[in-house]
Every structure is written in C-alpha cells, then in structure tokens.
Amino acid sequence: MDMLRFITAGSVDDGKSTLIGRLLYDTNSVFADQLEAITNKEDGEVNLAHLTDGLKAEREQGITIDVAYKYFSSATRKFIIADAPGHVQYTRNMVTGASNSDLMIILIDARKGVIEQTRRHTLIGSILKIPRILVAINKMDLMNFDEKVFQKIDSDYRNFARNLGFEQIETIPLSALKGDNVVNPSTSMPWYKGESIMQYLDTVSLELKSELNSARLPVQIVIRPDSEYRGYAGKLSGGILRKGDRITAFPSGMQSRVAAIDFDGKEWEEAIPGMSISVRLEDELDISRGDVITGPGSYPKLGTQFQAAICWMEPTPLYEKNRFLLRQGTKSVRAEVFTIDSKLDISTATRQDPASIMNLNEIGLVTIRTAQPVAWDDYSQNKETGSFILIDENTNQSVGAGMIGGLPI
Image 1 (cartoon, rainbow, N blue to C red):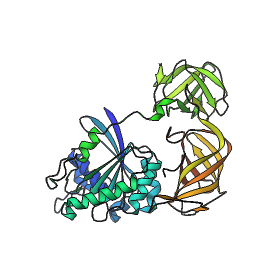
Image 2: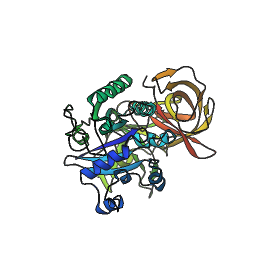
Image 3: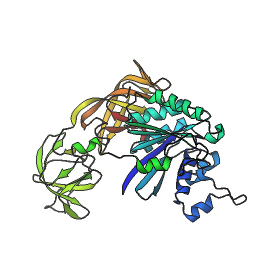
Image 4: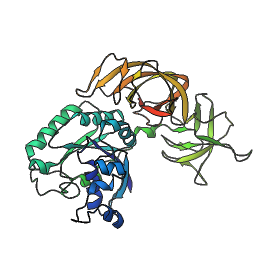
C-alpha cells in the first residue's frame, strides 16, 4: 500500500477540522474512547472538529492553532492528514504542515467564496511545489446546494490559480457537517457527477518525483565505534545510492566510491529516498556534519549567494542586511538577507518590485549571502537540499522559511 500525505488549508471556520473528523468518522477510523470524548452527553451530538482540535485553547475558541496530524487507511492506500490553522497569525504552522504534503485540500466557505486567506494558502502551496490542489467548496447546505454558487467559486479560484504551476486542480462541492460528498456521494446535488473526497483521495495518482534523479545524503553524524569502522550517517533525501557508486562530497569536492551501505543492522546493495543509512567509503575522507554526499548524476550548486522565495513568520519586520543563522538540512551557517528583490501581492498574485521590507506572513524573493559555501539544489528538484529556515540568534526562534529558486509568478 502506498501512502498519501495531504494537508487541509483555508480560512478560519471554513470547516477543515470538521472535514477531517467526517473522513475519520465515516471510514470507521475513530476509536471508541475518542468517540465518547467528543460526544455531547446531553443530546448525543458528535462534534467532529474536536477529533483534531486537541489543544484546550482550540476547543475553547473553536479554532485550530497547531498543526494536528491524523492517520487512517482505506482498502488501497494509507493517509497522513495535516490539519493546518486558518488564522493569519498561525501561517508559520501552516507552512510547516504543507512542506511534506503530496496534495493540498483548500476549503472554501460557499457563503464567502475565494478570500485573501484562500489566496495566501494557495500561493504557499505553489511555492512549496505541492503538485495537486483539491478545492473543497464546503457548507453547500447553507446555500441550498445551488449549482450556480459552486460554478462561480470554481471559476474564481481557477482564474486565480491558473498560472501558479499546479499539475492538477479538482473541485468538489460538499457539506462536511452533513457528510455530502465527503466519503459517500451526495443525494442533495444531483447536478454533480464527479467523485467524493474519499474517492478522489483513493485514486489520485502519485508519480515519482524529480528527487529520484540524483542521490543526496546530508551527513548528520560520523559513526566511529572503533578504528575499523567509519560510517557517514544521514537520511537519503533524493536519488538511489548503490554499493560501488562513485560519490562526491560537498563542499570539499573530494571523491570516492561506496564500499557498503548499512541500514537496520544489515548491509544493503542500494538505498532509496527516506532511508536513514550509514555509508562506508573506500577512502577515509574528511567529511563531517553538514556536508552533502552526492551520487552519480547531477551535482548540487555550490556557493555563498543564492535567491530564494521566503515566507516571513515574525512580527518584527525583515529588512535588508539583517543577519541570521541559516539552517539547511544538517548544515548551519551564518547568513544575511542581502537584498529583498520583490514581494507578492496576495490579492492579485502579482509581484511588487522593488521592496525593502517584509512584514509578518508576507512572501517575497530575497538574495541570501552565507559566511561559508553551501551546497544546494533548487527546491523544485529536491525539497531537502532546496529549503532552509532562518533563525534569530538572539531568541533562537525560527523567523523565516525559504525555498531556493524563483517565485511561482
């Protein structure tokens, strides 16, 4: 069984937590004690949103604050759901949840249509290179299941997202509260002939990604239990690495061949992305934490300056020449935002050139300069070596999330 990771996004009160609760409830993925905890003792009503709103503050305020992860499966596929907060002030949490997703479900309240937070989350999905968008037009029951309402929102959304680089956009009308078109097809919308949410999730294609083209092993630790063993350990973030492959270590550029690949206490002939492995080489090279071992194929870029799309996640504005600790995979290096080259206008999905300041939750294109050479790939080619976070050294807080490469527009 393969696995689909997806995130639900959209504005506050659009019904994200209720949709996930409905998916879990209607697929019989709720344990008896969980069901008892979310059932009102007086009237027997089940509050589906509370399946994901686990924090006390979330239940008191009726909002999602932190990203909640839920797991369930069907007969053909396993699923990991990330329920992202809708409030603007928690955009940083949404970025975290979206970074590893294969699919984004954008919920839209049928009464409100496409609003600013809808556009913001769509742009973030585009920058994070999420290939597929499922637009769930929710609360159709409050609009009398009107087909014209659905068609208008569908058209508005597609006009906004058509140039953002998504491989696929699908639209489904539903009522998460009542269960229409969530797991089971709706009888209230005979004009809709498409799939339900669950049918779509079960059948959507999951192709191999471009990360499989060239091996990347960011070194986390060098293992030396004795004088006979030297293993370079880390999580393979792209490509297939095989015994006997010629490797190049960056930033040094030194080369050797793979003598052995250790995983789960055994030697393996090859490793695939996602495996946490220890690699032994034919030569004892000076490789340490933060270096990148690359296999045959394309090399990463190497240098001290690159452009990146960045989402600013700190109330204090970002100015040019501000300095931070840049963390990319296992590597940490001091860096500065040399220039702010442009910003995105969320409302119109256009660039604002030039720019000199970025405020909370704004998305822009910046030029980064690092104190030491960094090996990187474009984010579209490898999410691990193409992404980074900026850390305020005074507070140790993550203040920005960056994706190396251009903006989607």
